[in-house]
Image (cartoon, rainbow, N blue to C red; front, side):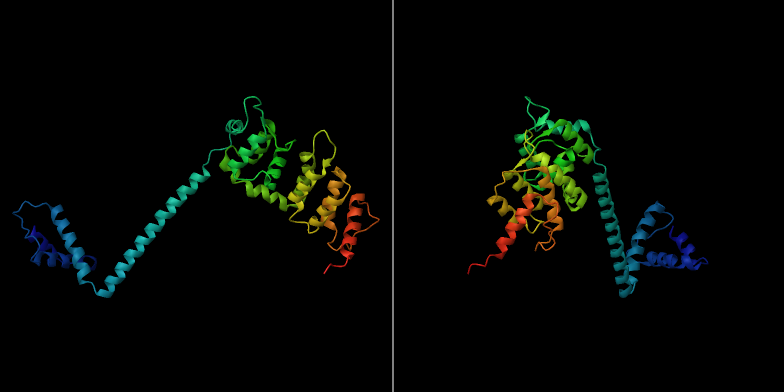
Length: 301
């Protein structure tokens, strides 16, 4: 075999094969290389394996140091690219798994509802169930997002969801498990940033919160709902709340309720654009008169 390889290395060569033949000559003349000959029963595969190992060692040792560094850097760069591709591939697989979440199931949604009801009234989620439901989704019962959720369900009574209301709202939201609804909470809060949606939710809140056997809302409930809806957005809310505390009003009717929102949106904080001859409810006329009198009082030093 050695003779054949030597004969091969001495034959006319093309440029593309000359470096390989030179390496074969070096390999055969190297003292540590096996002495191959035709009489030995050595497979060509074994020779090629030893030669390949030698050629790799020789190319690295004979290569100029600067070029070796360049090659090492290139190899490291390749490894980084491979590692990055693997990470991206794993990330893509994880993203695909999120996208492949089970589609909405009314049966699963109904089973979830049953977790908050009792056998005596399986079609109604009451105050105890509501408390557990709020705890499960990580929201306080007094959080305004619960009012928005009730609006999506068109729930008729505060503190209660019927099976029909539950299925209506959560089918619309495509939520049948806790985790899905948790991902929708910010979407529900965003309804409050839309003026038309906010107005619809504000109007809905009156019928939702009032006693069903009364046409008006009691003053304490009204103050709590106004705090929830306008407390952070209407600069005059604290003064209006003080006015209600010292007033004769024990209830608020729907016309008064709706006009409070309109007042908060259109009347300047200094009341400069308030028209006393406008079509405002008497309650708001009295509030303006009370607030002007309060502001005209000299500050107590």
